[in-house]
Image: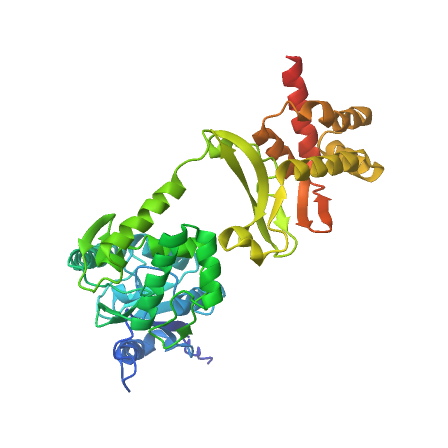
Length: 453
């Protein structure tokens, strides 16, 4: 008589990943810290479910000193990558807010979990994400976690505002002339003399260019400081923008600013009020508009296209005016504009001359057989019915309509065409953008149709 063999039930393995997180680095140097405590509790829970096939994966997913209000956490990103790769079946964490404090973020994570058939377990809060009641409980708990995070953020903002209004230094890079100690700004005697020199020099000459040249010759730079991690950040040379930041910083007259309102600071001032007022009177003079022509309407068709071949930086448009009329237009190297003309072998280029040279070069290139062939290929690819002679005719009609275009239209057309425009003492290096030839034909077609209408 044949006897049936007993059926062996094989319990499927559930690969469990333990995720731990701590918001700050406090206590992480201890032999048994908060992350270890969370992991131990999670491993104990996984062991209790051994009969269900639960087993921990070898990898650790620990995020020390990371906020739960963001998903930009290295261990979490690594965990999500392993989930996508099918290496994890269940995520176990000590408490819900260790995983996320944002309801929106957690909802997105749960969508990924459901797509990959991954379950989520919090060992101190019993719920199962596979049931509707478990998901409801989860959302309620997460809503409270998010409420707690937002309340904490509000308290921090209120405390910061109250501290600033009392003149307390709330961190960041201390300004030149001060060192930060115990949340207070303490005068650095050597740097304070440098700050007073900057203010006096500007009050004497009123020229930011001359002051910057003097500071560089004297070896005076921006603030050198050390980060909380002990990394030394060396101060960079002072350019015009940095100079104006120093001259406009009310910390030097003993004030702190919060949301554009000044409050008396707890630190000692470096600059007296008389010198401060004299400097700011000169700054107000410099800021007075010297042209009635709005900046956006100043004719600079090469704006945003020109680069300095000596410094490999952009050249910006500028102009001088007299009686509200633009007298002289030119493009200037940003290095020269920020410091002085001595910093660049090509500090400025007459705008009209450069624009005429570039336009003539563009006209010549548009008539070359190679460029015309490329334009025909580009346009016919998008519009097979367009005749070649029509395309050639449109390219040749740039000359008569150019002077009729507004500067902004000229700039738009050149941006379609110019891929590279580098200016040096030896001339210009101009290269056309092949992809822009078709767009140029479309623009010229539209312009021609407007003129005929």
